[in-house]
Length: 233
Image (tube, rainbow, N blue to C red; front, side, top):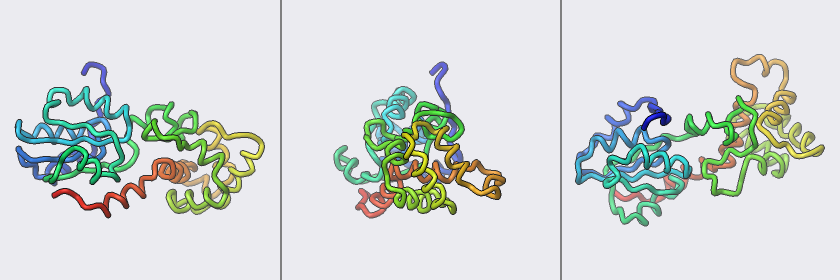
Protein backbone atom coordinates (compact mmCIF):
# COMPACT_ATOMS: atom_id res chain seq x y z
CA UNK A 1 0.00 0.00 0.00
CA UNK A 2 1.47 3.29 -1.01
CA UNK A 3 2.07 5.59 1.94
CA UNK A 4 0.97 2.97 4.48
CA UNK A 5 2.66 2.52 7.80
CA UNK A 6 5.06 -0.41 7.54
CA UNK A 7 6.30 -1.76 10.84
CA UNK A 8 8.71 -4.69 10.99
CA UNK A 9 8.25 -6.62 14.24
CA UNK A 10 11.28 -7.27 16.43
CA UNK A 11 12.57 -10.87 16.27
CA UNK A 12 10.25 -11.63 13.37
CA UNK A 13 12.37 -14.43 11.93
CA UNK A 14 12.87 -16.04 15.33
CA UNK A 15 9.13 -15.94 16.06
CA UNK A 16 8.25 -17.54 12.74
CA UNK A 17 10.91 -20.20 13.17
CA UNK A 18 9.49 -21.00 16.58
CA UNK A 19 6.05 -21.58 15.11
CA UNK A 20 7.44 -24.19 12.68
CA UNK A 21 4.58 -23.44 10.31
CA UNK A 22 2.81 -26.32 8.61
CA UNK A 23 1.54 -25.13 5.20
CA UNK A 24 -1.94 -26.54 5.82
CA UNK A 25 -2.10 -25.66 9.52
CA UNK A 26 -4.33 -23.38 11.56
CA UNK A 27 -2.60 -20.50 13.35
CA UNK A 28 -3.53 -17.63 15.64
CA UNK A 29 -1.99 -14.17 15.82
CA UNK A 30 -3.47 -13.08 19.14
CA UNK A 31 -2.20 -9.50 18.84
CA UNK A 32 -2.55 -8.47 15.20
CA UNK A 33 -1.15 -4.96 15.62
CA UNK A 34 -0.19 -3.75 12.16
CA UNK A 35 0.03 -7.24 10.70
CA UNK A 36 3.76 -7.87 10.43
CA UNK A 37 3.66 -11.25 12.14
CA UNK A 38 0.42 -12.20 10.42
CA UNK A 39 1.84 -11.50 6.98
CA UNK A 40 4.87 -13.67 7.69
CA UNK A 41 2.64 -16.48 8.95
CA UNK A 42 0.20 -16.43 6.06
CA UNK A 43 3.02 -16.38 3.53
CA UNK A 44 3.99 -19.78 4.88
CA UNK A 45 0.53 -21.24 4.38
CA UNK A 46 -0.93 -22.95 1.35
CA UNK A 47 -4.54 -22.57 0.26
CA UNK A 48 -5.51 -25.18 2.84
CA UNK A 49 -4.04 -23.21 5.76
CA UNK A 50 -5.91 -20.76 7.95
CA UNK A 51 -4.94 -17.77 10.09
CA UNK A 52 -7.04 -16.09 12.78
CA UNK A 53 -6.08 -12.52 13.63
CA UNK A 54 -7.25 -11.04 16.94
CA UNK A 55 -7.01 -7.47 18.17
CA UNK A 56 -9.03 -5.25 20.48
CA UNK A 57 -8.06 -2.14 18.48
CA UNK A 58 -10.54 -1.60 15.64
CA UNK A 59 -8.03 0.57 13.80
CA UNK A 60 -5.51 -2.27 13.86
CA UNK A 61 -8.09 -4.65 12.40
CA UNK A 62 -8.97 -2.17 9.66
CA UNK A 63 -5.35 -1.65 8.68
CA UNK A 64 -4.65 -5.37 8.99
CA UNK A 65 -7.44 -6.20 6.55
CA UNK A 66 -5.93 -3.79 4.04
CA UNK A 67 -2.39 -5.09 4.46
CA UNK A 68 -3.44 -8.73 4.30
CA UNK A 69 -6.02 -8.35 1.52
CA UNK A 70 -4.16 -10.71 -0.88
CA UNK A 71 -4.79 -13.57 1.57
CA UNK A 72 -8.30 -12.56 2.63
CA UNK A 73 -9.71 -16.01 1.85
CA UNK A 74 -7.47 -17.65 4.42
CA UNK A 75 -7.79 -15.13 7.24
CA UNK A 76 -10.49 -14.57 9.86
CA UNK A 77 -10.33 -11.24 11.71
CA UNK A 78 -11.71 -11.22 15.25
CA UNK A 79 -12.34 -8.10 17.33
CA UNK A 80 -11.65 -8.93 20.94
CA UNK A 81 -9.20 -9.39 23.79
CA UNK A 82 -6.70 -12.23 23.51
CA UNK A 83 -7.58 -13.07 27.11
CA UNK A 84 -10.88 -14.38 25.75
CA UNK A 85 -9.06 -16.59 23.25
CA UNK A 86 -10.98 -19.78 23.96
CA UNK A 87 -14.35 -18.07 23.49
CA UNK A 88 -13.20 -16.26 20.35
CA UNK A 89 -11.96 -19.45 18.73
CA UNK A 90 -15.10 -21.30 19.75
CA UNK A 91 -17.20 -18.56 18.15
CA UNK A 92 -15.14 -18.89 14.97
CA UNK A 93 -15.76 -22.64 14.87
CA UNK A 94 -12.12 -23.55 15.48
CA UNK A 95 -11.63 -26.80 17.37
CA UNK A 96 -7.84 -27.00 17.30
CA UNK A 97 -4.85 -24.89 16.30
CA UNK A 98 -1.29 -25.71 15.31
CA UNK A 99 0.36 -22.62 16.76
CA UNK A 100 -0.26 -19.25 18.42
CA UNK A 101 1.72 -16.03 18.61
CA UNK A 102 1.31 -13.10 21.01
CA UNK A 103 3.28 -9.86 20.83
CA UNK A 104 2.21 -8.23 24.09
CA UNK A 105 2.19 -4.54 24.89
CA UNK A 106 1.38 -1.28 23.16
CA UNK A 107 2.22 -1.18 19.45
CA UNK A 108 4.40 1.50 17.89
CA UNK A 109 1.52 3.09 15.90
CA UNK A 110 -0.49 3.46 19.10
CA UNK A 111 2.41 5.19 20.83
CA UNK A 112 3.12 7.36 17.79
CA UNK A 113 -0.47 8.63 17.50
CA UNK A 114 -0.73 11.55 19.97
CA UNK A 115 -4.52 11.40 19.92
CA UNK A 116 -4.45 8.00 21.63
CA UNK A 117 -2.75 9.44 24.72
CA UNK A 118 -0.44 6.48 25.33
CA UNK A 119 2.84 8.36 25.36
CA UNK A 120 4.43 10.71 27.87
CA UNK A 121 6.39 12.29 24.99
CA UNK A 122 3.47 14.30 23.58
CA UNK A 123 0.71 16.35 25.17
CA UNK A 124 -2.63 14.68 24.43
CA UNK A 125 -5.97 13.85 26.04
CA UNK A 126 -5.75 11.19 28.77
CA UNK A 127 -7.10 8.19 26.89
CA UNK A 128 -4.76 5.14 26.57
CA UNK A 129 -7.49 2.75 25.38
CA UNK A 130 -6.43 -0.02 23.05
CA UNK A 131 -10.09 -0.64 22.28
CA UNK A 132 -11.80 2.67 21.54
CA UNK A 133 -15.15 1.04 22.22
CA UNK A 134 -14.35 0.63 25.91
CA UNK A 135 -15.55 3.25 28.38
CA UNK A 136 -12.66 3.25 30.88
CA UNK A 137 -9.99 5.80 29.99
CA UNK A 138 -6.84 7.08 31.66
CA UNK A 139 -8.80 10.25 32.48
CA UNK A 140 -11.12 8.22 34.70
CA UNK A 141 -8.26 6.39 36.40
CA UNK A 142 -6.34 9.58 37.09
CA UNK A 143 -9.26 11.78 38.09
CA UNK A 144 -11.73 9.45 39.78
CA UNK A 145 -9.95 6.45 41.26
CA UNK A 146 -9.16 6.70 44.99
CA UNK A 147 -5.61 7.63 45.98
CA UNK A 148 -4.89 4.20 47.47
CA UNK A 149 -6.03 2.49 44.27
CA UNK A 150 -3.84 4.82 42.23
CA UNK A 151 -0.93 3.95 44.50
CA UNK A 152 -1.58 0.24 43.96
CA UNK A 153 -1.74 0.62 40.18
CA UNK A 154 1.50 2.60 40.03
CA UNK A 155 3.33 0.22 42.36
CA UNK A 156 1.96 -3.10 41.11
CA UNK A 157 1.68 -2.49 37.38
CA UNK A 158 4.26 0.24 36.94
CA UNK A 159 6.76 -0.93 39.56
CA UNK A 160 7.07 2.71 40.59
CA UNK A 161 8.89 2.95 43.94
CA UNK A 162 7.54 6.47 44.48
CA UNK A 163 3.94 5.40 43.91
CA UNK A 164 2.69 6.80 47.22
CA UNK A 165 4.13 10.26 46.58
CA UNK A 166 2.84 10.36 42.99
CA UNK A 167 -0.66 9.20 43.97
CA UNK A 168 -0.79 11.87 46.67
CA UNK A 169 0.36 14.54 44.20
CA UNK A 170 -2.32 13.48 41.71
CA UNK A 171 -4.97 13.68 44.44
CA UNK A 172 -3.86 17.22 45.39
CA UNK A 173 -3.77 18.39 41.78
CA UNK A 174 -7.19 17.06 40.81
CA UNK A 175 -8.76 18.72 43.85
CA UNK A 176 -8.22 22.02 42.01
CA UNK A 177 -9.70 20.72 38.77
CA UNK A 178 -9.57 17.71 36.43
CA UNK A 179 -6.22 16.59 35.03
CA UNK A 180 -7.01 16.63 31.32
CA UNK A 181 -3.84 15.79 29.40
CA UNK A 182 -0.79 13.57 29.41
CA UNK A 183 1.40 16.66 29.57
CA UNK A 184 -0.30 17.85 32.76
CA UNK A 185 0.08 14.41 34.28
CA UNK A 186 3.77 14.29 33.40
CA UNK A 187 4.37 17.58 35.22
CA UNK A 188 2.54 16.34 38.31
CA UNK A 189 4.63 13.15 38.34
CA UNK A 190 7.81 15.12 37.79
CA UNK A 191 6.98 17.41 40.71
CA UNK A 192 6.37 14.46 43.04
CA UNK A 193 9.74 12.79 42.46
CA UNK A 194 12.91 13.48 44.42
CA UNK A 195 15.91 14.98 42.66
CA UNK A 196 17.71 11.63 42.55
CA UNK A 197 14.87 10.06 40.58
CA UNK A 198 14.81 12.94 38.12
CA UNK A 199 18.47 12.35 37.35
CA UNK A 200 17.81 8.79 36.14
CA UNK A 201 18.22 8.11 32.44
CA UNK A 202 14.64 6.99 31.85
CA UNK A 203 11.76 9.45 31.61
CA UNK A 204 10.32 10.22 35.07
CA UNK A 205 6.79 9.30 33.93
CA UNK A 206 7.69 6.02 32.24
CA UNK A 207 6.75 3.68 35.09
CA UNK A 208 3.60 5.60 36.04
CA UNK A 209 2.32 5.62 32.47
CA UNK A 210 2.98 1.91 32.19
CA UNK A 211 0.90 1.28 35.30
CA UNK A 212 -1.99 3.43 34.11
CA UNK A 213 -1.95 1.84 30.62
CA UNK A 214 -2.23 -1.61 32.18
CA UNK A 215 -5.02 -0.47 34.51
CA UNK A 216 -6.99 0.94 31.57
CA UNK A 217 -6.52 -2.08 29.34
CA UNK A 218 -6.33 -4.79 32.02
CA UNK A 219 -3.51 -6.63 30.24
CA UNK A 220 -2.46 -8.69 33.24
CA UNK A 221 -5.99 -9.98 33.80
CA UNK A 222 -6.22 -10.83 30.10
CA UNK A 223 -3.02 -12.86 30.29
CA UNK A 224 -4.31 -14.66 33.38
CA UNK A 225 -7.62 -15.53 31.67
CA UNK A 226 -5.77 -16.78 28.60
CA UNK A 227 -3.48 -19.05 30.64
CA UNK A 228 -6.37 -20.51 32.63
CA UNK A 229 -8.68 -21.19 29.67
CA UNK A 230 -8.64 -24.56 27.86
CA UNK A 231 -7.11 -24.05 24.42
CA UNK A 232 -8.12 -25.87 21.27
CA UNK A 233 -5.34 -28.21 20.24
